[in-house]
Image (cartoon, rainbow, N blue to C red; front, top):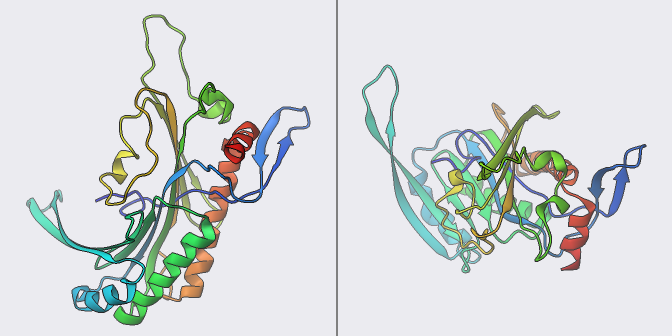
Length: 292
């Protein structure tokens, strides 16, 4: 199971910023900067992973956790996941894993609990404060009941789907460097253009930025599918669109399971995502998403 943040990657997107246009000294557009929430922000999926030291008896704590989460997340499922381990020095074997899902009545926000991690995700993103408060609330419940020992990894991942308003072109919404190389050769018909950037962040984490431009046939990046959540906005396979995928995570933490420390780390993880997002889009996009 991948879910980006889950196994080797993690993290996500920004909707709450400010509004003015910043220019280079020469007058060319540098980035759009804005405050407040965008009325029609492009975010379609947000995920947070908190990996902690394993608790093999997690199943014993699930009934109490489910009862505490049930008022907000009444949908509950227990699932058995199977996978094949292909270690080079050992024979192949089937590995099973249990996960417990807690989801809102509309199936747009939920949590997935494993013996060694908690995944929060939503397709109903309001803003970073709302999402972070939901994470902290659920984490407190799980920690109070299961008595977590320490946190090993935290990640945030945001996925934006950029589709032009009728009559517009994608070129108006993102900076030219994100549009990819499109050879003007009559014998070639561009199908998909992708970019990947890996950076080290100041907080000691890793940030991955991925861009996919295509007539997308799937609802989210492939490693996030299938998802149990209801997807509200999908790409139109007949029209070209862009997925911007922001993934910021920090590993080898050995951090106390303190909700206040967790909240601080989540804020730190979010900041670079917000900044890079503002550099990626244009002022035209900001005005379009506020206007419509």
